[in-house]
Amino acid sequence: MGSSTVPIRERCAFEVRQTKEVIKMWQAWINAILGLWFIVAAFIIAGSKTANITNNLIAGIILVILGIWAAVKYKSWKNWVVTLIGAWMIVSGFWFPSSYVATVGNNIVAGAVIIILSLWAWAGSSRVPKPREA
Image (cartoon, rainbow, N blue to C red; front, side, top):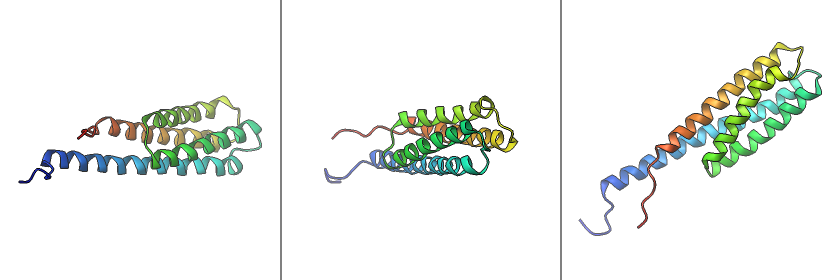
């Protein structure tokens, strides 16, 4: 074996890192898609309440930006911000009065999915082996 051969343990760690990166990417893309959904839902099911529309628009725009950004370049703080937005969407379903049950249900379900995906990506990233410096 030559000196340029990479030990199998390092190759496996590299493959695990690549796999984890792909996993985080799909979760970030789903969160970005949910952000787009909040933007669309602001006009479809948020009702005529300005607070609901504004809330869904702001949360949706932030989710789209952070989702795409996290998919391109992962940083764990982005997952925490997205998790907080998901929690806010659950709370906002009750915070802003709405005559539409669909608005409350949408915010709760989508917020819960956002929290689950971002925590899942964060948990996966904490087990990724750190690259060794040569």
